[in-house]
Image (cartoon, helix red, strand yellow):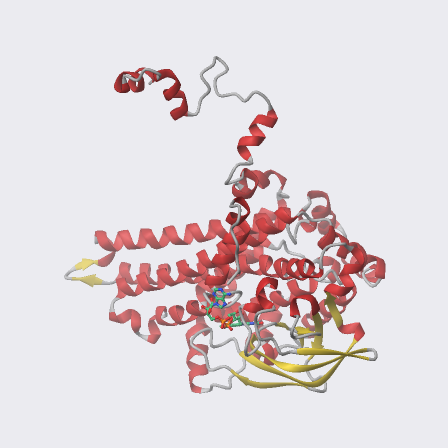
Length: 533
Ligand SMILES: Cc1cc2nc3c(=O)[nH]c(=O)nc-3n(C[C@H](O)[C@H](O)[C@H](O)COP(=O)(O)OP(=O)(O)OC[C@H]3O[C@@H](n4cnc5c(N)ncnc54)[C@H](O)[C@@H]3O)c2cc1C
């Protein structure tokens, strides 16, 4: 090998050149580093090992039982698909075209019966405590049958993330235990989360943007609480939810410094619903207008206020608010990637079935090379998207919101302890002021900025990768199926309408690209500025 290079170049300094090209030091030491600090200096170069090879770094720390649990989750999702989601997907889509006021009450009751609204609520809050990353696998499965039905289940966990990431243990417990009670009684208690306003969608997802936007939902301080005025739009499951996690601003001119999170119960005086959108896809999952007119919310329903968190950390209020937003979206965006990959898989499976059962000029489509190439490409897209959400979940599991839940001893402790232990011993402790202070400290003071950037950046990469790949796969499926793919009863037409929405919610894919640049690339580039326009 050495000779091959040196002979060819005839270079005067041939040995040196060879070793530069092959990255081996020209000594007898072979490829060993002098010491671990030398290795560290190579590994901390861009792209940093810690930020890049997450699965490799963290797989050994993963509790083994998570695999068993995830297999169980996938099996349940497949059963649900066969018995509920697949038979209903097109029927419900058609129904929502005939009746634009349709709300999915029966579907919510069915999902409640299957236990889906408590499955990923941690045991300490009364839920079933399945590991969080397994929810992405569940989402892929159910979205492969219907992304709309998956959102009827999944968006509830956007609000669950909003509760848990606040560090407010007392209020999280109060609401989540109502969800658990709703499962037991057969009267579902589903949650929604409301940030988007008529004049501010993308802006409210970033502290750097929110001050330049046009937020109007105002929280005015009064005795013992706040008065809310304003509106929220496109709130998934708004009409069907029992509680909404709501964000409003004390000073709408300086929202980044004055964000307050509340929980508000449906039926509260001054809180009403407008229409729900007659939208392109995921029609079974309503997107509601929420109206607040002099709506009083008492102090004991204040979930999060950067001003309050300030008591336990010296960090600037803006950073605390951004940290909170990042916790929530870093947890939910990998799930949205999984929705997208579910649709990508649904499109692949539909195209595969069509190609295996359709002849053109006496030859099965599946035996034509161009079709095989497209199917292989679609399969590749599914695999890549799955890797993206898996890595984003690895980031959350080891450097983000789920870190505590997945430390091996704590994970097994939560698995082993009986239900009464959580109900009688842990639940009362969640009401203590001290518990919320400790959680606040753990969430907002101790974590390192590079961990936040890693989780947020990976979540964004997964989000735009998975949803873009979903669109591509739907288009490829229609390519294989021709005009038959355009028919409503073929299924792919609906998938394409459903997936388009996924590119927009949880931050548009443009915003997620900018956030990925901000978190994963810009820190390495001196003078790079993001969200500067
Ligand atoms: C089906 C569905 C369900 C939803 N569910 C919820 C929900 O449950 N709760 C909730 O709060 N919201 C929800 N939303 C709202 C969603 O989060 C917003 O639609 C999204 O944040 C984008 O905001 P926007 O639609 O106002 O677009 P805009 O912010 O008006 O953006 C328009 C375009 O401009 C681009 N753009 C805007 N600002 C920038 C910038 N600074 N830099 C670069 N590009 C920019 C965007 O990428 C986009 O292409 C839902 C939306 C949909 C479609």
